[in-house]
Image (cartoon, rainbow, N blue to C red):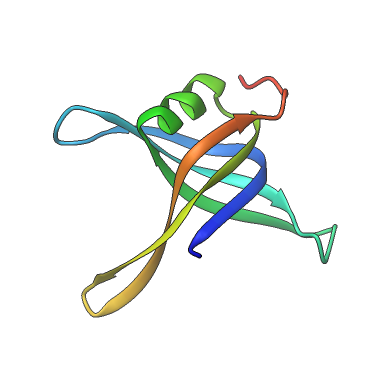
Length: 96
């Protein structure tokens, strides 16, 4: 399975527009490291469609659970991982 699920705080939210005129969001989820509580994971991801609408409406600093698929791509002979958020749920914290 190529899925992920992170709970944490939205940070670095950027709203962008595709060439087709649709909005999408790139953002980081700041999540706790289960093995080292003093360490914080910074997980960068992209959301399209309903997931993008949700994270945009919740805003920066919202407490969320983000889940989706792990994808990869090649560019100039190098391989990169992309995290595509397919579902964003509020943990009840209020965003700004």
